[in-house]
Length: 399
Image 1 (cartoon, one colour):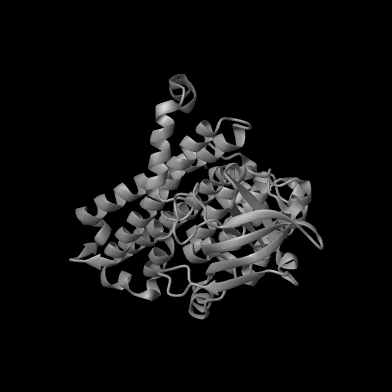
Image 2: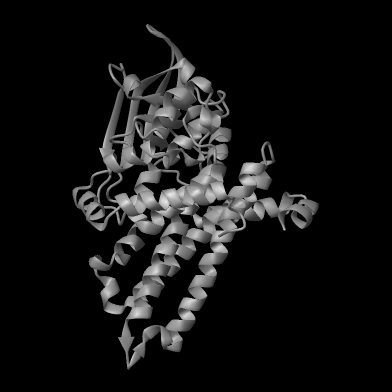
């Protein structure tokens, strides 16, 4: 039991874990990794049973459990299989930008089928010359008159775009004069487009090999005028709104991976014998596991508290949401890597081999401190907020 979870959330937790334990296997993980294939059938099933929809509103086929519900669902999947859990959740996390900023037409056209497991999302932000500095964008957009009505014409290059080779719909951040504008488009827009969009797989990743990461090159690529996400010239705002939500869900990936490593290591230490006793009885291992379980539980409470706050601070300032979401995004992924490394150490030589699952989990989890904003960027934002946030809010409401 957990103080943050009502019986309804406990039922969601059980359902998500049951789904993961029934559908996510080491065999499927290895097959998808070896063939560099996204687990489409697993993603479809996650939509059918409501795992994808846990955090989405009911008007788009979701369950209405908010960010806390999404965090629980992702945590449980990654607790069973970090690699597969991350891959499935990465199918919908980029689409949060449309759910948060889109109008009703966009949410029904793009978000609803995604929640049902019938669509996969992608977001195009990072560029070859700019990573963390999202205020600087070389990809340009111009509104021009065309035969099929006013359209936005996009030119430029984006990199590290997750899911691009098979995504159903895309969001792109562009420089629009002195401001930024976000657009959304789908495969229908890509077909018979007078412009060009070249999608190239970026090979040789350390982990998450079942998920595509691509370079996208746009040349006079046309997007309909009505496909502006949010408002024109407010693209940066749409991205910040997205980050405040997606940070929690990325942290949830790390949370599940940390629990995966912890329970693997604990089970092994209770079973493995050396020098005539269980290795858990050796102080070096026992104390290490004691620190691990304490740190993991602390992180889980921080994650649930942050998700709970996000769901309840409707219309709150970006500082109120940003402070907590940046805290989980920097701390939990780093903890996950520490826990997985410690688990490998506790397994000794066995932990170094693929069969134990730990080396693959470490490689897959290694990206979590990097994407959706690096650790350093989260710390920068936290320090920026601490300089400006109302001290009374910190004293009375945050603590």
